[in-house]
Image (cartoon, rainbow, N blue to C red; front, side):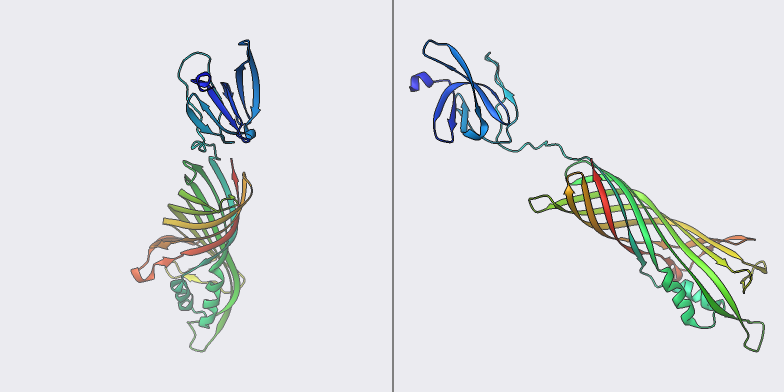
Length: 324
């Protein structure tokens, strides 16, 4: 028997039966082989891969695996590659990741320079200025990003984010030209708008073997644009520009600076192409100067080192991402 089997291929079934043959091809589901019967006639046959415990080409044994790739053995003596029982390292995976998210934001700094300026302008009670900017520190944010996955765990892309908040209130202003306390009622609406854009690096790791949960980290460095609008009710008290001695019905502050973002996300995958995540991030943002414009003039204001405008904020949001 050993003399007859020398140089032949061999298939061992899960029942430990041995089939001496010539293996023609191997696929994910079965093995095609040929055998010689007594009169040397060749007979083709097929065996399911799940019924195979081991197979070999000559004396090179291979264990059966459902991860085998298609391999065809030619009749000629040309060399060919034998299949491997380890998982393919180049298994395809989604290369693009498109995400959208939205939620709340909170400016970390107390905005003391702005509050002090409001107090200096003649707001009757300090708590009115404090409450005014406390409301402006709370806002909403939205984010859009797209990344290309270089590997399963690393991607590069671009990120865009927007933050907005607004507040409108009535407060009292003292008339400084009168020795007798005399107060005016003012109505002001003020809004913050921050736009961020920059390149981004994505890191991601699976949590558990079922690939349902994934932890992501995003790191970005870019540019942020600030727009601060103030609108006064013209039928109530309106502040006067000390440089022009004219009323400022509308005031616009603008600025831009280098900023960045770090975000941590936990994603759940209901399907391979869709994920839902909870996100938390921070945007460090400090302005050293602003351009201030009203209906008459426009000037550039540079802040002292101790009075830089710090609009650093934290974001918390829910996002949806598409993988393709």
